[in-house]
Length: 214
Image 1 (cartoon, rainbow, N blue to C red):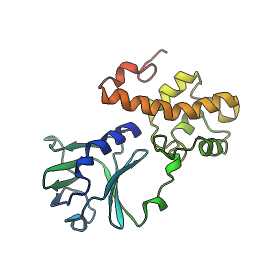
Image 2: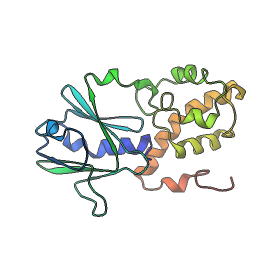
Image 3: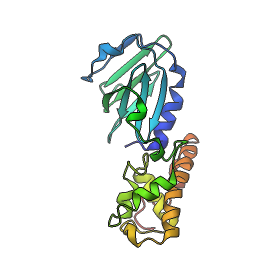
Image 4: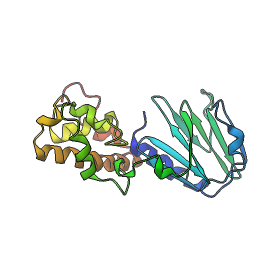
């Protein structure tokens, strides 16, 4: 499942289509595709693991689930297209993903302060939320998208290894300084993840993820 940094990269890659009109649409998605024809894309946004395509009065939410993927200005030959947008110059293709319409103001659907990569990310709010889960395992709390939107297994594993906290530690057993480091590193590592992925060297920096003995 793509984590927050990968969705940010997708958002950057498709910015070329901002303000452009959808001239053709196809795919096996059961959403009302006709409603999207000739619509102008107003913006591309991300919230955690959600990719958001914004139009006037509604937004299309793309969630890549476990095996979703995309291609910009090209097509895969081994998978059926879930949804295709064709513009005057270029196209976007989505595969094996969940697609949903969100009506009205996008701000009513999302708490931007919960996204660890958003400019409105609020560590104090995350701390208040996580303290409401005293009996939760720290590994589960890190994957709670209402608290750490965008964090997935890679970020979780690397953050816990970096701050030297066992995944099965209970939230209420963490010293206050460890809790502060946990919250801070969730955002810090996400931005490091983004830069390493841009440079095609993410896996070189894994200290814990996929490792059997660390």
